[in-house]
Length: 138
Image (cartoon, rainbow, N blue to C red; front, side, top):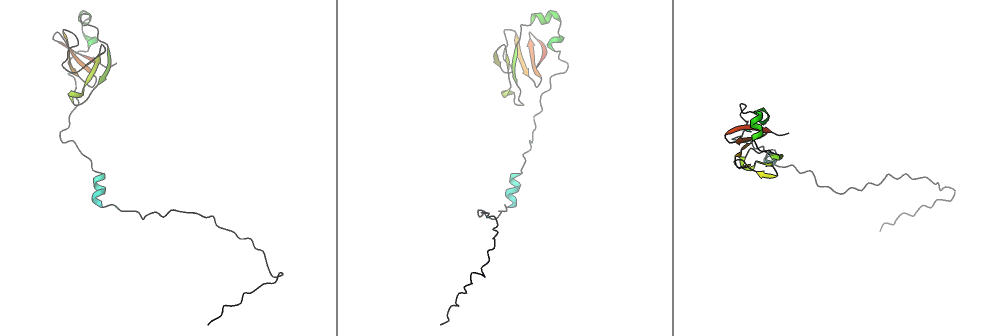
């Protein structure tokens, strides 16, 4: 049976002190390898849906006068309208406007003879006894 080598003992005069430099210890958690996704999955993530039937924002008739362009006599006959909120959507069902603290939708009456004809991007088209005019947001 082989015998272990005998330890070497240095004499006191031979012992030398040497400083030992330790590298900083960095502990890292084991991370899984990067996962490559199938090309189909990546393509699905970047898929863009295009509208096949785009809805255009309705442009008010440029021929319609603004409320401020009506005659002074007609402006005085129109009841006061205080506009305090306005929501436009390409879907007419979602449009609404607040006139005189009342939420209105297209086709509803502002008063007995004043009708909210249409809500536009810029404001509203109002029908006052058959006279159409535009009111723009301030």
